[in-house]
Length: 491
Image 1 (cartoon, rainbow, N blue to C red):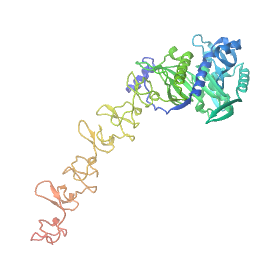
Image 2: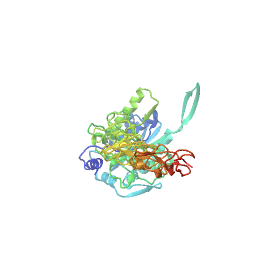
Image 3: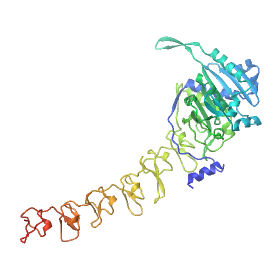
Image 4: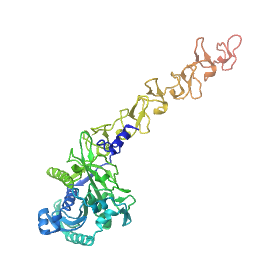
């Protein structure tokens, strides 16, 4: 078993903390400050949906939580609400997750149900569908309609280049939730697919099966908390829980603890399992809300219009390649840190460590190095056999090295040393492709020369051109006519 395989087995057994996974980072996304604030408010609504006191005295709760609209319902083990935040042009449908400190048996049944259900042509896990299809479903949907009606159609005016413009503002529909509540929000997004809602989940388990054409992944934002340590990065366990064949969808964003002002975008529909459980430190909704708020406030203080979410910078603690802007989380054992990708012939541990995307093992050196995109090692690199090299030539005895092939009349010891792929073993020189040596090349006899003439008294001789009539000769093969007379002249 490889070192990584052994490390992964130990992780799954819970014996060590974390392991970097060698996968590619996936670009970046740009969100306006308004869009991020909407996502922050989604985390806040997900947190508020847990509170039992929102079920009564709506006027008091609206004042407490800065809301324009609020209606909420509870039917064990589920609770949900519809709300609109003052100053935010969106209606939120928020669903409560499992109570982390006092979970009920019914909650666990919903979380781990093996059944599935069809929603608008997509298959979802039935436990999460049941969390939406509750006794108060009709009230929830009616409240969402009232909220959208109240929110939409407001006249908004603004100035641009000295002119005044007005338009009717459209209200967004956003479904949100934490943990189990996030999975229920994903189901709600499918129920309302014709309304093109936004879905924001926080530490949510897998809810939807892969063959789902109704789901628009760019409208789903999936947040995962991480706790970055020198000993290895730890992650919210809930997104990695048993999914019974369901998968994750949407824009996945990791909220780290080392630099809470810079989330890491890890790609669209990222399904990477992230090992290492930080339990309460990561999973509680208040930790998600806190980190979302810090990002919002930081960019607000700097009056930034847009927030660019990419990977973490080089030198940052990480757990997986996709968390790094460079696409490389380096290290064989903790601490793992984001690093620039390795250049050709530099040491590596996996393909994603290399700029070329190819990391190859050189057995006689017992190391892995970055090769070219075709997997071949360039000149000067260590090698074991000829096929390891881009030139097709691996030269040396103990420490073999890739070298360029040499031309005709150059020294060689095997055919692969030569550009012509022909090495005359009798003289240890490269010949032409026809196996012959040109004029001036060493030879054993005339059969090795293109001219058919090998001259010289010492070994080896030299290939020379044949002589014209009247030139002095010493054997028939010296002459173009192939006839050297008794006067030692060519006829």
